[in-house]
Image: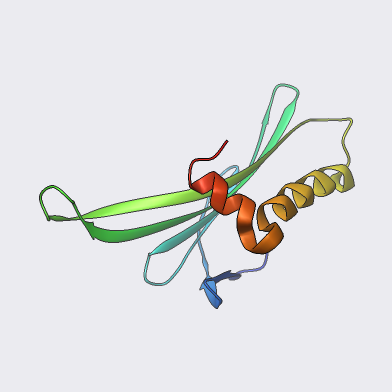
Length: 119
C-alpha cells in the first residue's frame, strides 16, 4: 500500500497529497486546495493487467474569447499495459524507467519537443 499522504514535487516544491478516496481499483490523492489530484489505478481485463498513474491540475482561467473565468484542467498519465504473465516487475520497471529517462534527457529536451507538437 502506498503511503498516505503521497508527496510529489511540482516545479521544485514538494506537495502533499492526502488520500481522499478509495475505489475498487484505485486510490485518489488530492491537495488540500483541490488544485491537484493524483490517481493510482490497477485494472485487470481478460489477459491484461493495466496500471495507470496520473496527475491532474485544475485551475481557473479566462476564456480567450469571452474573458469569462472558467474551471479548466490538464492531466498527464502513465499507463503500463502488460499480459498477466511473461513480464516481471523488473522488466516493466526497466521499460518505464527507459521511457522516463528518454523524456528527461538533456533537461527535458525530448519532452519539450513532444509537447510542442513534434513527432
